Length: 240
Ligand SMILES: C[S@@+](CC[C@H](N)C(=O)[O-])C[C@H]1O[C@@H](n2cnc3c(N)ncnc32)[C@H](O)[C@@H]1O
Image (cartoon, rainbow, N blue to C red; front, side):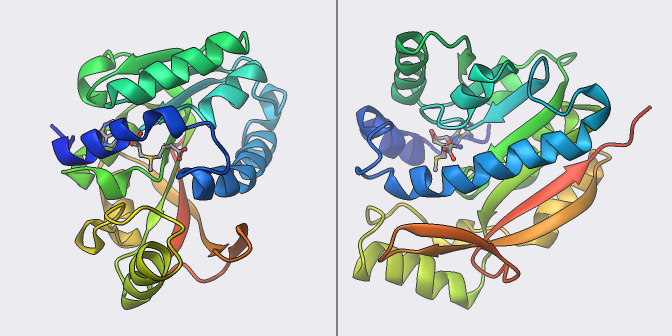
């Protein structure tokens, strides 16, 4: 099992706030604009031969929360499965998708248990989730095993550096309070090499690593070269 009960309970308590762009999930809404544009660019370049659009792509969003990215990708025509271990989040995601007439296959539970072994996806997303799980290697292994030949895995998280302690914990949670206290535990942050090793064990190779900068006072996010705090890593499985 990769779920940490206290983490799931904490997310569950916040589940009604998921789609409030000015609430506790504000940082996710801010980075989501950036992530969404990046995912669409990636789809356009990597799946050019299949039209370069999300239309018809099989997408898996692990730790999907309220569906901030799963839902807009489904609205663009992708066949999306979203999995989350928090009942409140899955309920919020289902409610929001139904309200907007978007079809997403939301599933509640542990990814390895709610996915059939033969299910594979063109694009697997694990965004801001691996720093909240018990066994990163197992979680990433599951994510990677479900990437189809020629498919991609995108994983974003926070590196375990002194810079992340200063900016992501002391700055964001205690001084500026852009995130509720206790959102992150430094020891659970994930080094890019740890992510890459887990992905490599399941046959994926790294193709991109980029830093993400969040400016808390302005609530703005941008890509950068510095990966010592937030970063997004992309891995690919060779086509058959
Ligand atoms: C910080 S939120 C990120 C949500 C979403 N990926 C996003 O970026 O908008 C982390 C999510 O992962 C979920 N989660 C944590 N551990 C999980 C696990 N082991 N399996 C599935 N979901 C998990 C939490 O319930 C929460 O919804």
